[in-house]
Image 1: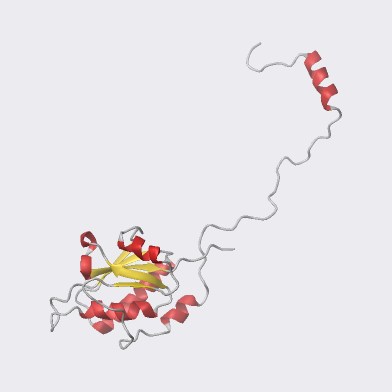
Image 2: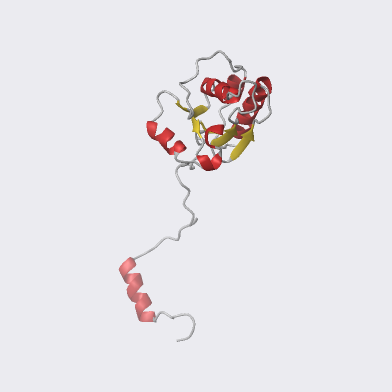
Length: 182
């Protein structure tokens, strides 16, 4: 026998006797009962506008600040902050605030976070510097970021970056995850 195997007539007859009469299937495709949801996250309509319409307050109470800063939104699991501190999230974008005024940094940070959420990014880095060139040689932008970021509903957590990524002169910011489209 070459190429295709041939079925002997007696085997074919034996098979048809065992199976009995068969009706041909018209369509061999089987449609699923319901379509699967998209894996792409969907944007909450109006969320960005709601968050961005609220200006940052410089007078807001800031979490305790030392050399290292950290914040975890109430109700969020502590292991998320631990993972962020260890660098367990991929930093997908970075913003450098060196040389900016407080007012310039405020608008730039707000626009940056909004843009990164629009790109569906989750973990970002903001470099604020250590304040060595400020008038009082104190970290002004670091203090302001520590006040501003907890005011945004889309910020889940933030912490000082590890030494290789800016150390206490930068923060990792974890943004709220978007839900998949239903």
